[in-house]
Length: 640
Image 1 (cartoon, helix red, strand yellow):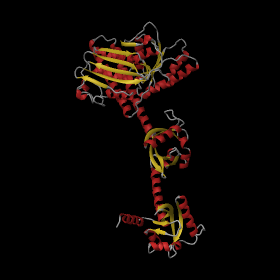
Image 2 (cartoon, rainbow, N blue to C red):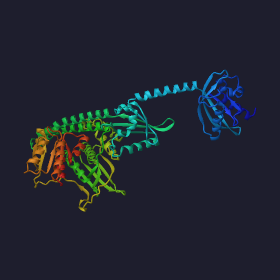
Image 3 (cartoon, rainbow, N blue to C red):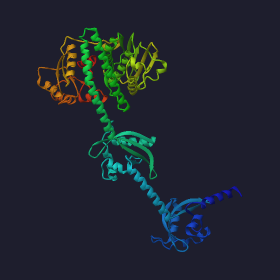
Image 4 (cartoon, rainbow, N blue to C red):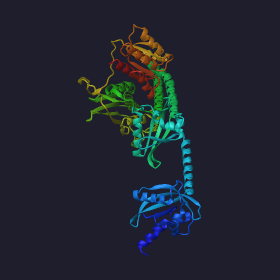
């Protein structure tokens, strides 16, 4: 047997084993070839019988009234001339006259060098059975989609929503699926939190999902009453009715956000309740230290101060760690002066260094001072690195160095380093010191204190800024922690006298002038602390108990013009946020110059700082009050 004969034999075998009937018809519609499935379908004895009896296997007329012979020739001719496939229902008969409804698909193929019509037959009982199976599968699929705990929606390539599940309807309190599809774009606010129009961003995200195959992001939805609904969206590339489509999953985040809010409220309350007594213990003890002459009493009071500071550091670290692990720590950039920020760090850490007889040198080298970035976070990193350096150094000193360099694209490269002559870090511990709760030596927890969170916090913040802290250390000789970040410049002209290079920062005080300060705090202890701190520095201070009294002082005490207001945030009758907003509106309505308002509060979470600034306050000082930081903020508010 030749290869061609083998090939034909294989073709015939495949042809006969097809699960549906198949018939070949030439252009003259006289010669027919069929497979074994046709023989079975019509109850024939062999394939030749089909060709011989073909006309008898259809009634004279089809249900539409046309003669079967004429209609069959017409359909065959159409498919041969156009080449377009055609599927239709046909009424056949078996040899004994039993009706045999079938589904026929006609298509054109080339056989032995000529065009032939190929007809595929399936009995309607089989078609109906398959349709029933498909329908059951569709029903089960729809039931699963509708019972899912999140919304499901399909988009086509143009971004049109084409189907959804019942959960989507319930999620937005709608009547039915059609209402969801018709009013889909009303279920998002006009703008997303990023400021981009929702319709525009929807199409962009769908196009990205078509390109990448998978996309997950957060989205702000709303119901028809305008109530916002934060959600997590997952877009997946798939097909729908044989066409490319995007499958979208919508997960309602309202409960999670409510849980986060409850946790944040709890942390804020814990922070406030702990800071209020700590503020009294720490600040009143520091005031006593200024007047105590007995060495033993001074030693005991100093121990109280150090113990309170240790509690404060631990509380700050745990609260910050909670925000990091919740993914809630964010940067809040604004224009600021690098030199002023470094000066504040020097003022805050000077007392700690002097207490250990360490030399603290702060060097600023560079002409680029004004930049755009998160001043508070950068200050926090430098304070944590400096606090570690002072803590682990017995003799010698600590140097903070800040260098700036203008880049070709106009940005400013800021290089920061903190060097000490302390105990250093063993080589095998260098990789672990930035891990949470990790310290270079377990004995240090007892000897030097600390929670093992500070460096992890600093590394996380620098990472958000696009940098990384690098450490070089020689065991028992000292360490250098350094990092560099790139910040955009502030487009403000500076006088040549403002440029500084390699200077040691010193605090500035001017005791010849009288500065009037109005402070609001409902705690008697805090009132004493604030009054003593301010009067010791030469300021004149009036104390009130709530925001309402602050407003009364501004409105009715015409003999007093206050230079600065120190505002607690949580007070009875009227809190600091509401009072600040009233003051800003009052100033604007009456054409008054804004009075600098400094928040002095026990709330110290990042969102608390942002809330203070959003209400109209100028700066922020947390409790327990660091006297040097408070005076620095007051002097900065006065423009000195």
